[in-house]
Length: 290
Image 1 (cartoon, rainbow, N blue to C red):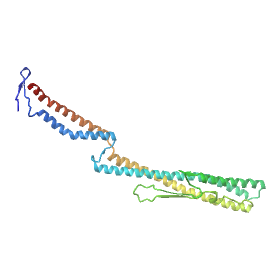
Image 2: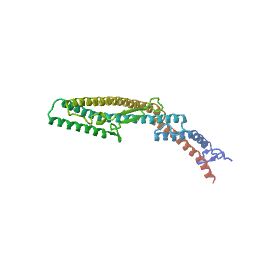
Image 3: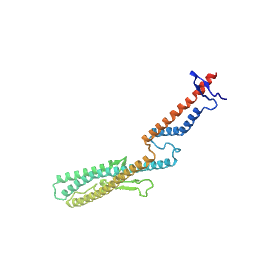
């Protein structure tokens, strides 16, 4: 069916077609080309909204797999860092308490040295009372030194294991043991100062307690250094994995995504306008024939 032409306004002859609307077909072809790009625009919008380059497995399956593997590795590294920080906190808390104990033992040793010489009765009574008070204070420190509700230098001491290596690493967990630091465990709970000879023996006992506390603090110093190094090492690893791997694979480049979305919108809108215009001629002809 066809009408080759119709005489319209002022004698101008315009060719109109009903069977084949070439203008609409051309616009449809342009829209068909732009349709995949429109899907890309939706994906670009999702990337910008979520700040992720890979928003679904269908977008990039292999990239998603690598990205999720890296995210899992980041989670494991973060947990290892928290473990190292916990170990560091335990070591610092115990070391601070033992520093106070060491000060008390130093004073106790000074008193026993004084007691080993001939002293008046009233002086010996005062020395004995102070040594007893120092012993009680050492027990108080041991009973109240805790980390997250767990006693550190009490009668049973402390043992803790901390996994401070990256997941899958061959490095063994760190086990930290802190011996008890009560007056009884240090041997200074009941010192005999009744005679100069017994006071001299008590001095040796207190010196042994000082050496024991010093050895414990030295070990805690090594643990503090180990945990500090672990935190620093893990922090660097987290930065590397996050910035190099995850950012490159999973994070969205906002400028690129916005540019892509704008481009597809520019391509699609004229095509849709042409499709609408392509149908106007046929609609006008049908009105004339009505």
